[in-house]
Length: 317
Length: 317
Image (cartoon, rainbow over all chains, first blue to last red; front, side, top):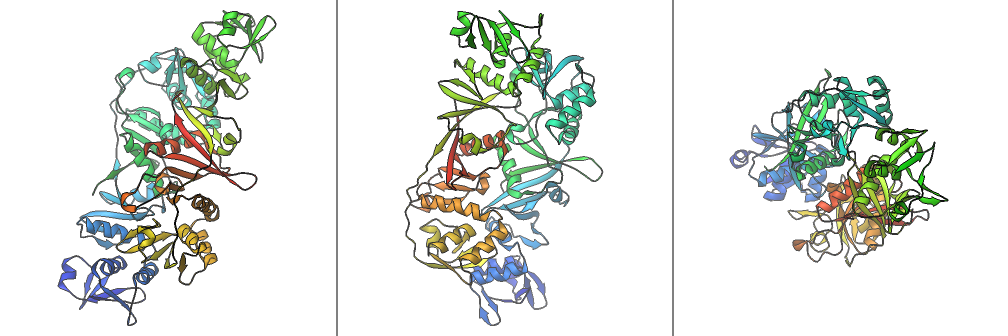
């Protein structure tokens, strides 16, 4: 087979086989081919690619393809991987489509979770291509998470010490799983302290809620936004603890009956909003969560100020 | 037992038992106590802590202790953990000492690997205290890593395509484990391309070494420093591949006999230099490496411009 390339497009003579195998778009007696299809047919199908009467070498075809489609390398390797797995994918805009919709992304590409989520493609699957051209797949889904933990706390007292609130009311930990407990001393975070004060379950000696917020902002400039998400998760009836150790903001339990028999936390939650990050960072956070049998939720604020929860999950395709 | 606290120090009457158990420093008829010792004796030993004739509550003792020693909370929880494990630790400057030298660090504390390494304490152990006051231990050691991979490459040719160099010389991958190989096309990174050009093993059509460096800097502003470390590792006879997927700069093999029977890479290597980062980031990188049975090396450049390799390893104490 021969493929003819021009400055910014490529074609082959019409062939039933090509059409049936899902390559290109028919236009008259020709099949117009996408650069990834040209690469695939040249490398896997031994097609000759001709430019001004001369047959191009594989590197030269890559050079041509990069000029037409800058991101062609990750697209090509995702395309090749999916074809090998039996998907008759077609390039459509940014995507590779075969029933499911795949978005190829180089691992080094900088993205925001928001821009991915707001594509509003149902069952979008990211095809993340690493530096060695291996492909890993991640399902993206917006979810509306709900816990099943209900609590009614009585008011108790605490004592601010630097960035912690200490209390000798061990029920805070033993019954409600706030803070940590050692030797009869419950140690609350400022997030917990502000929340408990707000719902009238805690009085911190010498500090009202606004004072506590002020202190918290001194230790964490991003306190207010993190608190918004913390409170949202509490109102969704989750038990919310720090996720610091996992590099996320929170870890979240659907329900805790007893701290002595603690279930696994279900989600890690990271507040990302519009923060740009390389795709590998998203991938790494998800992998880290799945290593400890949790799912990872990324949170951003939409244009109406509402928190959106985006589940990203590694899958096999 | 009664402990008397003043503005910035505390003491108890001399007692043989206290001295024998390793608390405080004898001064005349008194034992001068460190704030963490005061907390420990009050919480674990039921000592009464007296300030101006009044016995303080536990939160009040914490308040006093924070005024004397700002970081007292992580220090106290590391101290308590080590005592419980049978170490008769003593606070000495920043450290807790009992044969071994422990440096307590709150997980949120911002550090540089360099400032930790340059303490030049033999067998330093970091005692990292998380937000819930649990303690994890990390051994820090400067190492001089050496591989055992020797190679003699003949010159071959490549083709620059965006940020990769393509070659059809499959020996580059199959015999020497440079780049990645798919369908007869070897795909090298720019780091590899510059290195191979420098040692005379690669000619990239239309680009000399300086051109390649220029291109590389466009894709990675930190290219020159990463290349320095890459080359250092190559001169140490390692096989060096990208560690991107693990959130590090490189993964490093001591020796690769055959790509078909690839051994586990031994180290992940991250170039940190003087970059400040929260302790939990160091901890996370180490944990991630150990999850995949590798060790993590952090690299910084010393004042003479020499690369220093710092191994940080999670240990049980």
